[in-house]
Length: 157
Image (cartoon, rainbow, N blue to C red; front, top):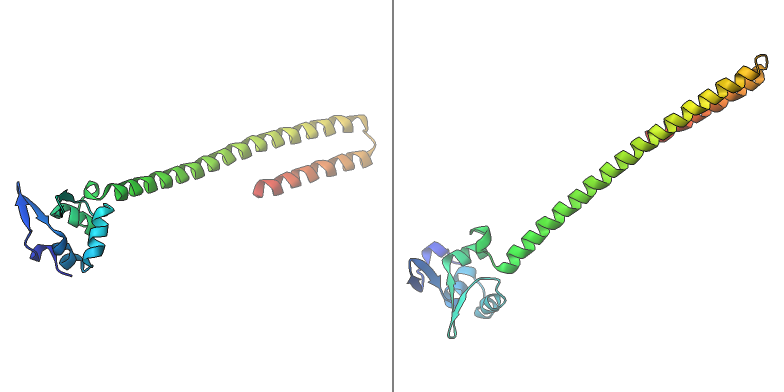
């Protein structure tokens, strides 16, 4: 492979340097057939005049990774844009799923805490009817404690 800077361009038009297939063979260290295939597949941007391909220096540098983003071949640009969109979409979906889970958990926590409060109030009223019956009071107290314990375990998971 030969460095681009050391190669003399085949043509210079309006200050722009152009190379031909033979130059790319030397620069890239590829066969002529492979270079022509890359040019036909638009992996390297070029201009075809008659039977000759002319490759602007900035397009060659873009292919080699040294050029600006929009100097690259259209399929490479679109591939990178699509990849960025996909990553953004996936990260937004993950964030949205996380937020929805947070909201659901918050709502369920409030509902459960409200239900525990209602159970406590019912147990208090029921024990008022059984002043002397400590067995009923103990049973209600155990049920309330079990509900609270189950809620705490569920909240941790």
